Amino acid sequence: MKRPELNNEQLRIMKTRPGFVAALDESGGSTPKTLAAYGIPPGSWSNDDQMFALVHQMRTRVMTSPVFTGDRIVGAILFEDTMDRNVNGKLSADYLWEVKRVVPFLKVDKGLAEEKDGVQLMKPIPSLGALLNKAKGNRIFGTKMRSLIHQANADGTREIVAQQFELASQIIAAELVPIIEPEISIKCPDKAHAEELLKAGILEKLNKLAADELVFLKLTLPEKGGLYSEFVAHRNVIRVLALSGGYSREEADDRLHRNRGVIASFSRALLEGLSVDQSDSEFDAALDNAIESIFEASTMKNTSTT
Image (cartoon, one colour):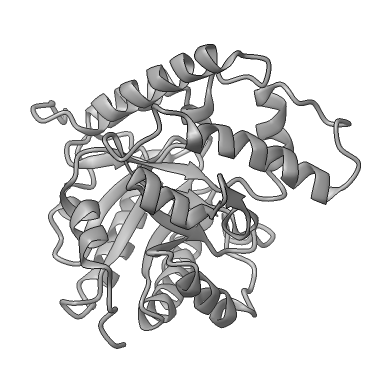
């Protein structure tokens, strides 16, 4: 794999600036729930085009809010449909970077396959090469891809890690930085054991990367505080991100406090409390409260990991 020709300013920001990554990448399967939580119930649209237009309006309201800036948010993950649309006359990724100084990422997976060996691998991505070229043309810095672990199954976890790093190799070769996201369900009956299996598998793969092959890790907040400290310190890991995974913002923030060096990449927990019926001032106040609590949890310096 060749070394990515990265935007050095964006790389510096992602390595060093305090803050967190906003996950604004709900896809077709999760968009109805996102809209319902926002106060737009199913039946408010007749087809996917209308549904995506509605969710883009919501995302635009978030991104254009005066409280959504690079002062507290270092990056934002976009769905492909969002990348293709404009925000205030600019392509979404350009708006994020040029106006808000927020580094743009793109979700590239196409959803989950059926469960096997306690996990759901990603569906095949036959158009990955074209999508990565498109992302480069849209001045995207990195990508995100999600798979899901339901059980503490060694074989399934091995497959999850292998697939994630195989795709990461292709993404690095395309001069983008992958966010590797093997989520563990918060409903996993032996979640702590699943986390240990995943950690061992990821560490083995990380230790085989060349020094200039850089990745992000996006992981479920663990049962044991500080579990991923080796990843935080690893030479190949730019940042370790935490997903909220269905936890409330309060619980997600509390768990994040126990994991020094890990920063948030929340979706539902970020949008919690926002409503289409709020006035702009009410919306901005609610979003500001969410951003501040997640920012504080992501930047705590002297937190116990017990």
